[in-house]
Length: 427
Image (cartoon, rainbow, N blue to C red; front, side, top):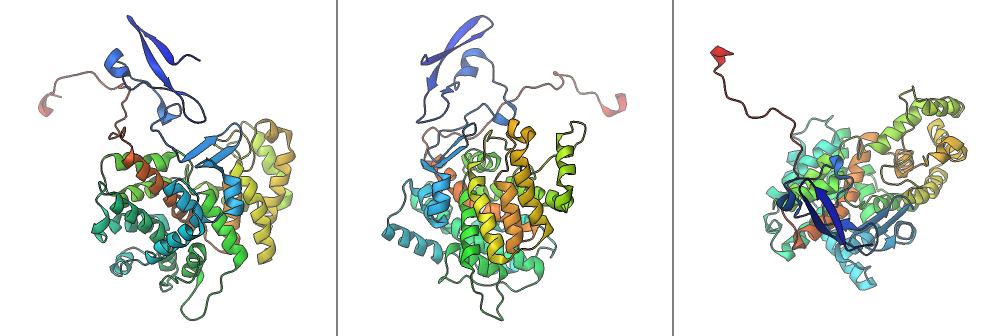
């Protein structure tokens, strides 16, 4: 391949360098396009545009590959822990034993929230969506932690990153507790990151909470699988907000707001709602037939993916995990039977195989979270908790990038051309 790309526009021909990454598609560097040609590119959704250079996460949707700092997601989910993945994303390498122990201690020291934030929670209605609460509280952190908002100071950036990762489980658990009218539980530093979150969510002051190790491992895997996913909508939002110089807490709040959208973070809730709609295993053929009918608006939620045109590598891990959780919790619910049989039938159906509509991570994660005891309103909040690791890693990378500029997409203008104002009495 040539190291330049030629573009012909009326009256001239220009060349642009082709940049090559360590893996994945090459990119055409068009930063001088407007200056040289007076034209922009048109790419709604930025699906063919590389908005940044990044060394964090790589996705090959055609091959079903997801790598974090070069490590396959399957290996990390099976063998690693969420704290180890968090360290990897922030620092570029897997930690040694001493480094991991120190990192765990650092995160643990930051798990408590400022006590005045408890009052802030009480300003919300009891039926407020947990994502509304998380978005507000995350943004409010900048009002309490002034010593970590200077983005020009690498030490302050890292302190803010540690605080966000550490406090997000506390924020999410308190959002849940507030919605059900139960008292907040303070973090217990003797527990793991995920075990602590389970206790803060489901424990009560009146009795001791015992963490189920199977549930703890399953939730830790879900956190790993949602830690980062390249330049998706919420991550791009965090980067765009950060490009203006906004403080890290505001940037993460922006990411939470974007993730709240049903087309992004709400997919696992939609998948579970679909399973409830099907209701019984014997109705599965009816709904599969509807999914194949072009004239029927019904779609099987939790199947296929915007990026993955092969099997979602995260779903492979979840396929095993869902069975482990069902067995441990002795789950007996028609909805879960529907999930397992729908998965089996779809994987054997020629229509779904040909169109590569495989079960994705959202199909399984919603089922698992429901079996553990989380209401559907908490699903996206858990997604935000896990994705905070990716968001802060991406934000740190962007701030440190010498090529970074404030985001400023352009447009194809189709409104009226210039016209003169007419006084209201003459219109």
